Image 1 (tube, rainbow over the protein chains, first blue to last red):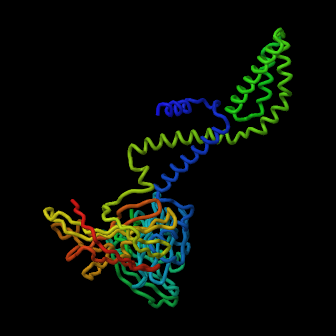
Image 2 (image 1 turned 180 degrees about the horizontal axis):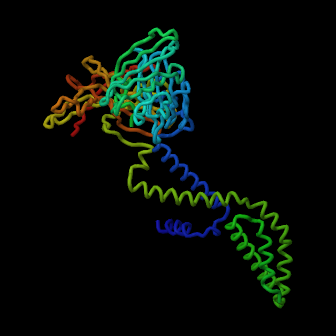
Image 3 (image 1 turned 60 degrees about the horizontal axis):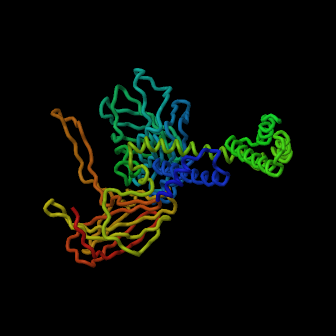
Length: 238
Length: 273
């Protein structure tokens, strides 16, 4: 034991120039293996982030025992989109939306953690407030100049829909209502405009109306926003 | 007598092709030792040789420094040396970071690769049945009747531990999604859902009838038990009413990517606090 310790001590106290090339290589391999191990630990602790949002999304589908859905919308972080020249939206985090005949899946990545939300389409379109997508400009809407519109996402909108309107029951400050704009295949964004100062929860009641191109009513639905499938808390498990 | 700087100049020239300074110093030291040996040999063979001549012969014997420089530069690759130095710095920095971070979270090291969840593991099962679904391999690794202290109001439960082995370490199964797809059938034939169930909805109103606080209470029967680099285990609990040693418990997966039924006899009774 003493002999081994003296050997270790001798190696530890060696100056750089005392190492021969073979020893250098051995130590280099040991260092690299140690670095790889630590980096691997850190990567696992961070939730094993993958290079692209799409890869993350597909992984979430697999780990949630779901077959892959059809990706209908993929937005990068800080992406700005102008809708009909009237409303401009921006993303604060990357967002991916995929659909299957039964449900819509939304994947986002905020503060390093991935959120995975599922909304049922069994009873028609699903409605949610997603903090990753927000309105930055609502050109035609003018009120007291201080109350900004809220972006509401509606999934599973039929292809024949040409326009729509949503009304949200705010906790305080009366209802918010506004027009809808097509964001992607089956995904619409509604600019819910307030009339006064308001307080809106993510599970507020809504009333949605979708119209055909000729102005006739295509679909009418009432419900509660943000009703997710399978997860009571919406996000990923610990 | 030949001044010393001739020797130094020779050494400087011969080693100047080595770009990694550590290697350069080491080779210089070796060459210097070699020169000393040569001088000693000359003095031994020619005892009366003048110092200057001995040094001149020694340098002549060492060869052309420019040629040696080219050879040494070819042999010693600088990137390997720099990589070694960089790796040492990286190790030092990582150790320091871990020391700082580790003080806050001392479990950071081992919980990355393995760890334990809220449920404890009992009654190991060797070589249980396996099934595959969605790329994952499922196996029952534990089954026991948990005898909980009735003094503390505990109800005896049958616990089955299901392991889901992932194809890749970064694709470990989501525990909640797994629990939401699982059913356990007890010895009495009753089928129990293991996922999240809404148990209570509440709303607190103030004196004017406005809701000031509202919420929902959820409960789950399948909870995280243990995890490793490529696997996750969930503990599934059902009531143990009427259980007899050897009774079979069935675990059923019903998901969009497939399903299976695994069964295991529960023979062991474990006292838990």
